[in-house]
Length: 402
Image 1: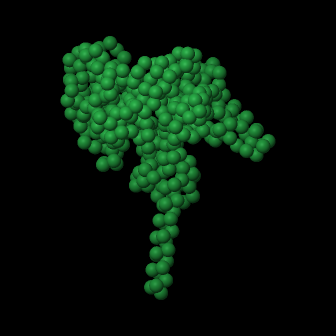
Image 2: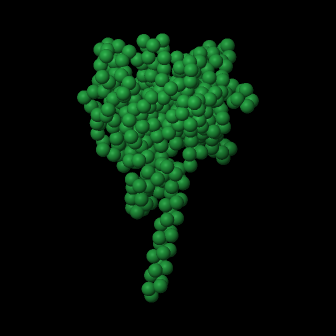
Image 3: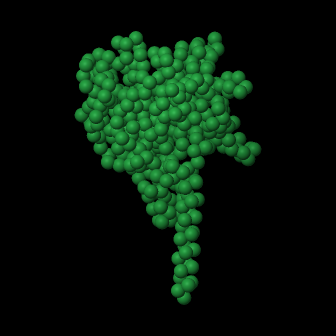
């Protein structure tokens, strides 16, 4: 009798562990459906521990490309919406499939950063910061603090933002630095943590931020945030200001010379990278060892074609080693260094323009926080969905996912 009970307990434990291992490998869309099957599964999938481990263990090779669009509608005017695309299928097309994840409730937001399935968005006009998870369509609007002002006015300070994950405290943090470009006023540095839901002051950078320009959004890599700082009274000399999310200490990292040619920071092969040079021939440098200035090495040199009018930004290097960059005249393009082929990233609609591109990995983060946000799609995207259903009924194959 006792032996049967122990076997039953052991088999139940093995079964529960097996379910957990399966759940941790499933995409959020499937897990959201499974929550409706039983109370125990709903509780398990919605627990903070499962959400955290799922975000860390879910296959990072399933990384996608999120494209923020700007489109025009006769009744509603200008609108923004987002689509998700498989990263290993560039350039993107309707035949390769995409996910229409609808509109964010508030237009006019820029993407501060992407981390573990969360997007940090900043509304410039009203100085509002929000976190958004497109996978589960949940958003969390951060509360304002005394230093959060509308910096569009002439006397308001500049703002530098950063977003990342602190592995020590298992918490997401948003850093906000307010500074004046010309006034010699001590900058105000604040940090917001999701677990506490509050803002608090932190020590400002040791190097005084006066008569400088700081890159608006930070690059999060190696557990730290990084901004390019340009000294306007020192012939445009640049350096990297870093902020460790665990230590909450600012630091300084030197750039490859001439530092004045530094344009933006990126993540290349999980390492900090900087784009330097003029728009017609930008160069990509990668720091091979964390905080080791001597480890900067040339990774790639890109030359713009005459028709492109120069390269405005270099956005990302995909798992297929394709470069995605933004040109002045021809928009977003994909470049394959092995074949030398260049092609447009994607074209949805004659009235659709691409504003921003960001890498994204699906997760359940924010499932127990924030509120569900509007997932309505633009009219033309809904029409494309109906066309796809018709093609599916004719050929029995579906290429679009919604």
